Length: 553
Image (cartoon, rainbow, N blue to C red; front, side, top):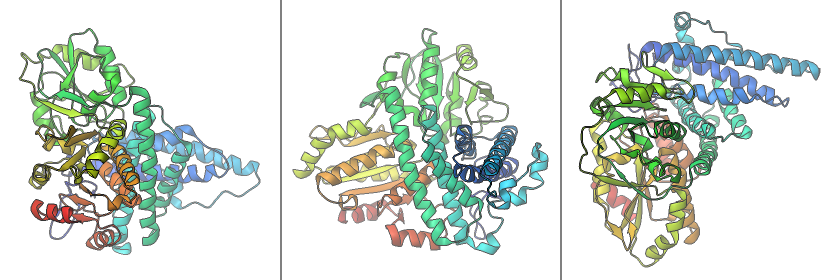
């Protein structure tokens, strides 16, 4: 096992990375090694997808499956070794079918097939135990001694960025958003990494190109969500329990939430969102369901305590699941799509009856708790509608600075930095936030500036797209570049979605971003130095000094 993809990565004086019987996330060495084999087989599929596209052969199933299966290898998504083996077996079958079509196309054109790297024809056995015997072939650090840590770090930056982009592609696909050109570019990046590249310049350019691709993907996802559910509207959401039977929906998938709401109508079940699903309350399509009563719980790392205390059923629509055996609620948690935990019931299709029946069997909340509210829904349209008023207040000198404080949450004590920063920014500043990092301060009172709320919850992690649109609108209004705006970005990272959003921002030329609480384990000091030199990227320090530096910029 070697895994260094999340912020929980084990770090010792002599090494960085989880390389023991299990990782810090709870992923076993077996699952980790099987996921590495799956990644390699998906790269093989992409090698043939790229070659076949040159002959005009495009397989929509392949275009869908590669990012979908890659999503299963993200942090806290799928811990079930049997499911990972199934993904690998299907990937190999798709590769074989595409390979045959490609060779047939070459014969029809009387041309020789392209000479692909050996991994293109990787053959894996159908049994997990036999795949594990070959784990050394697929370990991500297998060539580190030959290529050096900087090259390995850049390879992993690209791979982890692609994993984040794959997740957003799947979220967009569920909402009917597909783009053959985007899929083609995705395959190109996967195929490039399959060649085990060592050119630092090419790898760095690949990471920037992945960031640019992800910007297109986030636009697709934004369109899918707003076309399907309407544009979010600023909405107050209760964060406390309501008496009655209860079903909790976590993850990111609004499609699943809608199906659950439809199927629980009139059943006497109150539905709650959790984590990154909180912004769902702001979409008009969900406001017609009175039994969507609020948001329960906070960020992913607290779920074992919060889910144990939740007296109902739980549906994990996507990341971020962690061990449900801790807290003993596995019998009432249900996984969807690419999510998996050994022994937890997995729901296929759109019938959520097992989860609904489990919710009815549990006691639910005995009484109402005193409401505590947070406001969400300041996504693209709401921000654009408010932009003229914001610009007026900036010109009048009433708004002097913008802070984007957002990203993934986690359990390290250093993350108190983000709460302290939000509480410390001057009263003439606006705070924008997104993703689950906001749960550290989203129930605090920040007031307003002449009617403009000082705290603007933009939404899920992918709604970074909305924040970028606001920044571009402000830059246009003030006839300056984004980097000349009084705007500071302070991001918290944990897993691969945060990595690809960072690549997206860097690829758009956004500079002087602060990231924390620690540097990604796969970025060497040399690579961090390069990112600092090119983009001004830096790690968070202490709030007092960082705030003074940002305000002086």
